[in-house]
Length: 136
Image 1 (cartoon, helix red, strand yellow):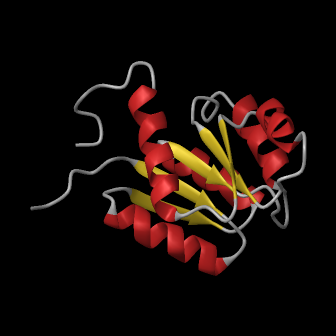
Image 2 (cartoon, helix red, strand yellow; image 1 turned 90 degrees about the vertical axis):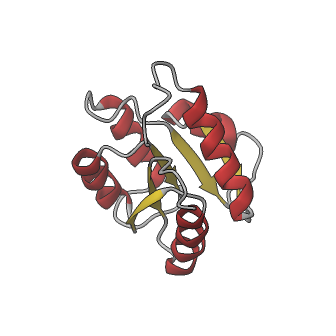
């Protein structure tokens, strides 16, 4: 039985192994996945592809995830896209700062891929105005 398409996820991480692990799991779980290796590439791909959700590492080359998220949320085309910060930054106050930058959720690494997929599904299911057939 073929799995129902569940949406397009943009995974932004500068570590190829991280991108590969999350991609494999998300694709297996029925999501489509696009990839970006830095913050500028994330902005470009988000505007081009209009993903349903972005998983954003915060420590990135070229433009960090903090600034990329701020710019995404200031852009009329991309401001509605939920962003999950997925980062090794676990110090006090980082989650709040990520929220101030525009991240909708904050998850620390290492994060098992199944937990990330469940959080993505929760966010997409809770989005206002999401039709029951969207992504089918």
